[in-house]
Length: 298
Image (cartoon, rainbow, N blue to C red; front, side):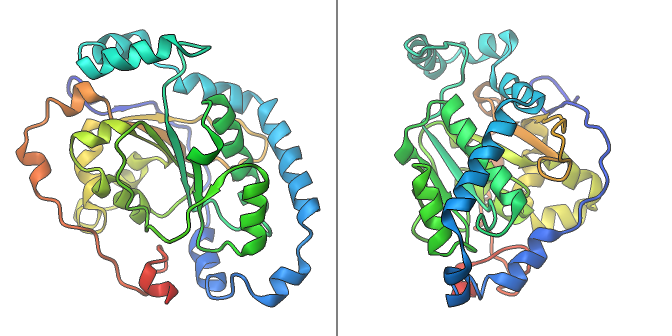
């Protein structure tokens, strides 16, 4: 734990190292997404049934029960946030909801869930997205999904479950003005960095990110590399709350190494204004295997 009001980390258990499947998957399939063979060989009904089965598995699991608890604010956080006027307004909104302890989110933005039609892990992760949408009471049109590997079948599956498709590659550079959950399981660190850049400043109070634990990058990468490749992750680390998601699901390589990242208003408000001033837009090599840029899709 760092200084007061700063970085808080719930210790994680060591997991076996995960192969970089996301990179190889992007390299092998991004150019072929939506090919005629894919469109002919896909059984939509079977995939929908699989996702429904996976959703039920997760819903009844200890993993999901623990995950829901992590979204409920502690009394200490409620007291701190209630010191601000905006938090007071949010508190009034919460009282109108069926469960006043649930956090208030207006939107869920899902990036990088993977190829639903072919990847079992992607099906499970999409099933978890559906459960969070229901748990957090997000309207259908405000649960939005983008994955560069999607073809028309993937998009139709997403629409079947009443989620919206993001029409173009935002490169995760979406600025938000209301409470938003970014659901980004096992994404590239570059995408997390882009979300931070797009909301750099007090607007980060609207952002919560579910994805790879940011602290793991700090542990694995030399500080020079961390600062040069993902400057915004490196800078915000002392000022966020990272809560490890216990990997208790029976399939250990689907939700492993995952955390929820909170950017509390009472912490952000204490940061010097100069901290936010340097804000160059992240730019990456078009051939970088970690990210599918707009240029790569042309």
